Image (cartoon, rainbow, N blue to C red; front, side, top):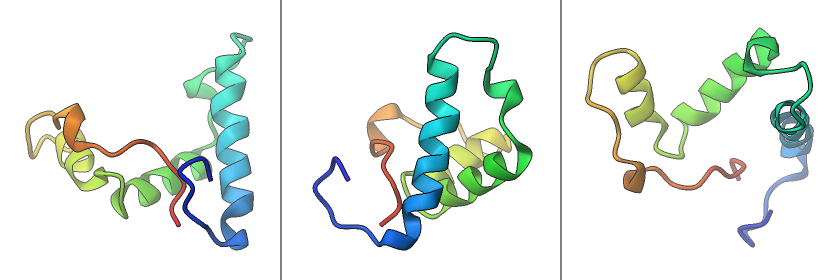
Length: 80
């Protein structure tokens, strides 16, 4: 990973899927977040909840906490 931390090969398919979905939106074509597959979005939320400050974000989304301070959220990286 770009962070320099090792990660298991078993995470490679999910990481590649993330790259395809996110960067497809970045291309500026007729594909946006509304087009993301529901199963991929659900898995990304699971990954958020297991790290990356996701619990703060989830609580905010559910209206149970104030907006998380961006400084408290770690950079978006693959789950090791």
